[in-house]
Image (cartoon, rainbow, N blue to C red; front, side, top):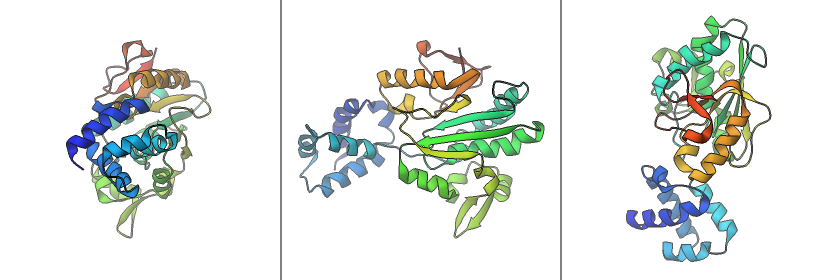
Length: 269
């Protein structure tokens, strides 16, 4: 399959699934390989024939949506942000007693294979807990993809996923097993992994912090962005914060404002 043909196909198909082409531009090869495999699996001549198959076939559109899930993740992705969370944002919560007592409730939306929620527990135990005696953290982590959730529950990773971690964290927080790095139990225990579609569902309760990075504002249409951001805002406690990707910014009318000028962190207005 030629790259130009796949680009043309994605520019046609993505808006019909409430997704936006610009977010897929740099990662399209991952998606194009999957689409090419699907065309071959169905024994179709080309993408034009696949378009005809999609016409009036809701089940195939659902399958195509699964092919468009992008899973690019690693521990402490955007490392500066994570250290800002550990040194400024989380300690600001523990300096007071917000609603809910002395337990911080966090939600990692679109957690993929677990690197994001587990990065949060690593930062908590390595940077925050030593200066926040008596505080605990709980993390609800959700994703639509059962396969990536299975990997998250296993919590064993290749060296590439750990490349941004400080060397001492790799040594003290992981165990080597069959050529992989498996996270130690204490960092798994605060995390609850749930299969949920962010477009339709929100976990029970409200949260001090929601991480929704490199997902909604990158891949979804503006209409869907507004709808989901509204639900994220409603799911935040008063004084809570939304954490986005380093190159993502909420729309002006979404009800969020920059939190103490920390890049990627936005407070609920």
